[in-house]
Length: 354
Image 1 (tube, helix red, strand yellow):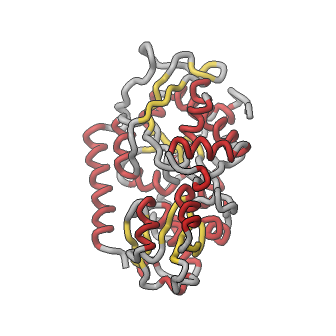
Image 2 (tube, rainbow, N blue to C red):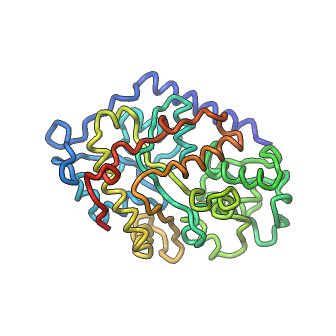
Image 3 (cartoon, rainbow, N blue to C red):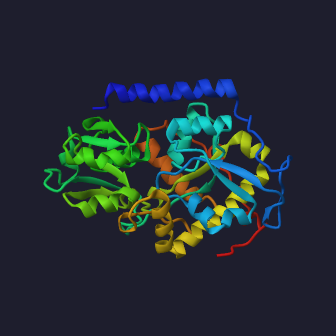
């Protein structure tokens, strides 16, 4: 059953976000343009450099790959890393301007932040799921000698999740639902991905839900095996690739005040995402160097081939959220959660270059 402390954590997250929004407002974003004034997006790039503040990523992400390749510099963006931050703290930092980009999470993450009062909006898609184990969004591991062989063996077992309301929790909840098991028939244990493998090995949990960057090394060490992965869960739900569909978002205030910066961000990011798809092994090398992990133990993700947000994939996530009780049916609306209006690829302002 869901522990009381996890319910309290979820409530505390919502209260803290509401309090922050009330104090700071959603539109008070500091200028990041060099030389004063707001830059304009002209001929595929900004006419003056803008310093884009982003959290330091702890997993595979296109932002540091695009910076390494010079794609963001090409469109007039300098990337400033502000330190590691996730979840509600990242949402707070984006609302108050300490960060500009909310570059992790999924449609679920944005929906829950908005529910708490943090007006974030998705401007571009992130990752895409794949059957290749090196590119699979998440894998749920059990010990090699675990008696858990199928979903029916999970009743009463402890399952790790990154935080309450995370993609780890939602997709495993969908796996349970597909097999006729209620969410309250397992015990959810909150811990970071980086701790889950060890917790599994010493017996503190029965299932470790971890992302690709941790999966390869865990399997190489032996003693653990996959129970199920997100590609399999998503395929059973009707869209395997969409089970990793992630979000790249900004505050509504920042979007309103800096539409040309959003265009530049989309231009550099789409180019990076498509480069990763075509040069995956090289992307893994860059990620391993950035994350300071052995390259043979690194995993990552790929990205959709389209240049803008796909409503079908958004609907896939909304359906998962509704069917598993994460949001009330009808409360998550397309026009509130994402926009394609500032996408320069879709408007024809720029064309595909990779």
